[in-house]
Image (tube, rainbow, N blue to C red; front, side, top):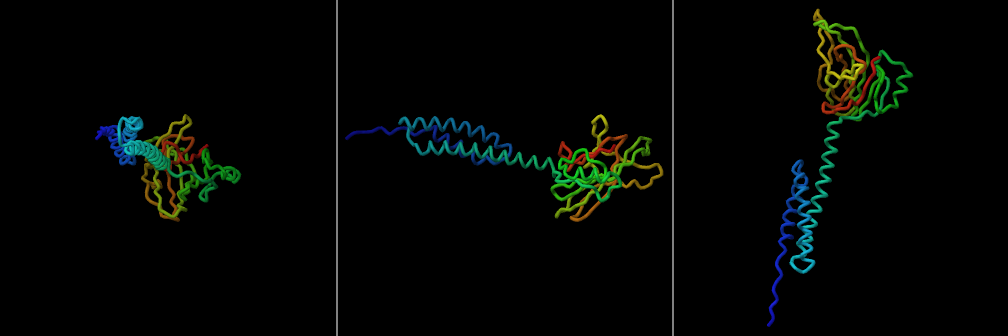
Length: 249
């Protein structure tokens, strides 16, 4: 009666399967899936070693070796897909709504009809003239209606006043904030708005902040120190780039 020695089980296939399973289970977790990607790469190498061993007949459990390789490849694909999805979501969150069109503002007391008509097709909404409104893809319309220069603050510093309007043409409420706006001087330096108070305590009409219901509209003043050449609107506090810009000269 003959005796046939049983081939040893592929340890590499077992280890590769464990690494692949862990990588798959953690592949959708932000930040953690960076480690999952490395784990899956190691798992692929280990699984290949196991697969080579069973194909050469030195080890047994070929199905497990194939499972190990498949799990790690799937984990790599899942990590790349989820990171791409998260990256797109972060980009959307930080960039804010985009401008879809521009037109002459109903609240404007400056800017000619010809200027507004030329800008109506400029979806980039850069270097708009005062009196032009920019409509965003969330239905919100913002406009720079007028500019007043030569104001003097309570402490004697020069101030520029920019009157702006928000109109919510969307179906959901949106926020408005005077810090949505920045002023830019001729040198390209950007600055946040400043407090403005007259020496006699008269009303300054500052925009302030709040929420605007669907169909609502709100106007107010935004103040900047010194002379500014342009004003920029940011649709998101995290965005580095403005959604629209106006030239004040």
